[in-house]
Figure 1 (cartoon, helix red, strand yellow):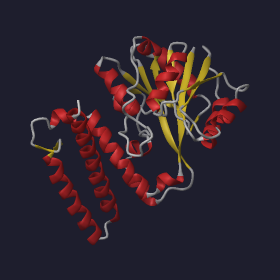
Figure 2 (figure 1 turned 90 degrees about the vertical axis):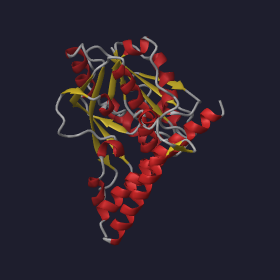
Figure 3 (figure 1 turned 90 degrees about the horizontal axis):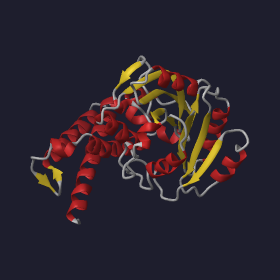
Length: 311
């Protein structure tokens, strides 16, 4: 048996599409159950969930503490079977999604983590500049050229991830201090923090390209303003997940921020001005992305410094 687990908050319309896709899944031979965590929804989520109660093996958990990882931790209490499969409330799994993950887990007993393919489902045709972006950090999309086999843990994306339940039975949990919360500028990396931590403990990851989910990309995510806000969140996550404190630990600090960041920011501002003067749209977007990632890393460094100062 396996358990599918996802968290949701205030996205009832998109959630309904996800549940309709789950209704069309091929049932794995070992059976499955679905656990959905209502993470303090203030809209119509409960009504949507109730309408699917007779169509899915659905179990609902309410977690009032806002935060994706807090919600997932609450849902882990209801997980049954030997495999926990994670997805998001804005995905559309292909019909053979669970059977392919089940097969991969059975065929590769030496692996504890499994990442499936994540492909886009655009709400409307994307603008031309979207192709210039890194699709993984931006939209959690996997490389279409990647073949089945061992994979780095940081490439296992939250919309399509499976982990053997024995890992969680040993006491492992998601870190509730990282990932989507109430703030718009949270540090990204909710599932990535876990997969990297598990890798350091010796657990290995396997890529399953035949297990596919479509990730719904909303129109608001196709604006440069949204992209650049995500760059700040991505930068915060990079600082935390990349052990930047160790990398810059011996360097001079200003308000807890390595001074080298300020020099790098100035360099990117020069690149932005140059790209603007030359009407180089691609370099302009790239330089703005790099600058905002640095801003995110600086924010994370400063916040850590401030927290330690108050301890």
